[in-house]
Image (tube, rainbow, N blue to C red):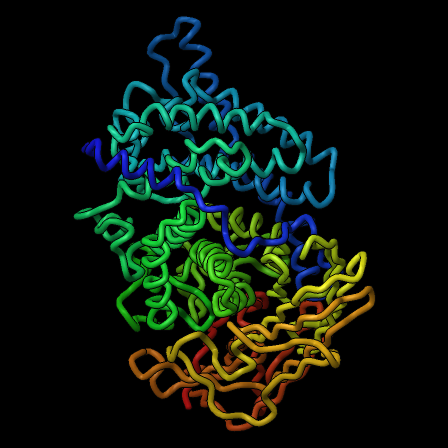
Length: 637
């Protein structure tokens, strides 16, 4: 299929009218550090356990070896073994991306703290990746190892011919670009970035004129190209990202969001990871081109998710078949909720916030982060969930053929995705727009931001999410007038999500207060933030008090699975009940009227638990850390 000359001209004209960027700019994760508490513990485990474990698994599983074998085939064929082929030793054509994501996560760790041993390992890996790149820039080990005939049924005979379906050639490229940019920014080394640019030049030659029209079967190349654009200022990469988005639809598979033009889509359908990556890529194009059509489309899709397709845990993608979004209100307790879908949902919601400055997107981000995302990794850091259901029978092999958390997977997209996201989590804490500083995420931390042209030190003292007491210290290097916008989480105002999909039962002791507002300050509540404007001086502070009663949650009556049932939350944390040694019997368990919260210092480093009678509910993210047991989030009334 071909673009018409007029359509291509319109596309180029649109892209050339580049808007500045997102109206709200994130504060880089390298400028913010967690200093204690909940997320400090999670990041420490991520760095000390998950990172070396993921690197080891990539080596032992043969994923790194794929690059060596691809290089060997090219070398030996060039030396005269014209018919040499090596059948790929790993399972999937996208196995290359696990190496790229591990490099990206390691690069984020290096950005915070240089480590010569780690850097040497990554330099070795990158050299092996570069050796597997074909002379014209093509990099896809499954074809290079087995070039004369398909080495896997998904790869196709020719380049790109099955990318709209399952070859994942462009998906691999997208993760490559994200890794290359991350490593360049962390170390200043161009070795992997140059591999990326050589590959991108090939994509430009093959796709840039619009003659070859391919809709990537698994999106992410769009976001990767935007990252290349940001580093190089080469507008070709931005144009390519839009070309790949606009190649979709009409009339293709809804599974991979090819059923309509992207600007005409209005509900979340198909494979949830693919979908959420695409919506995040559309947000990038909306911001960088100023094309309102993309923003309008993803706004409609987001409203569909938030009001009809979002689990209480912030997970999405209810159906195991196709790892897909279901119909409206189709939210069964055994829903699939792939960990990668949670990661992608966080990326998308953060971008929606950057486009609008509205806190509701960060409310969804927070819900996912504390629940449906974090549940994907064991507290030990070396066991993982691919799906994240809200009920489990204690025996089903629902985790890619395994019961309970697994050390790795044949399809291992989730572990390194968790790794890279946790490593860079502080990049979601703060954002700036002109003379406004947005405080989006609460954790014991310190950082440096620039607002209204002034460098400002900002720190948080808090035991969030177990306590709702947060002290913000705001210390500009010189007195300066600007606005601090403090996010008031929707849960503290009686709204679990920004829709009627879930509601809280009335409860005493809810509400919030903000202390530290001074006479003469301008202040107002808007878009989910409490905005305080003044001339800030070193040592100024605000103290936010968020009441955290235990809340009973009900699902919308349209959700068949939750009728006659309730769930429990405290703050941003969703709780569940595990049946250990036969108690309690989840089949007969009913929810009590009175539930008490207790902090258990000696359980998993300190967590809140809910007690009703002899029943104990634990944070959902911590389930299956005490063995293989039945579990449920929703309990009969």
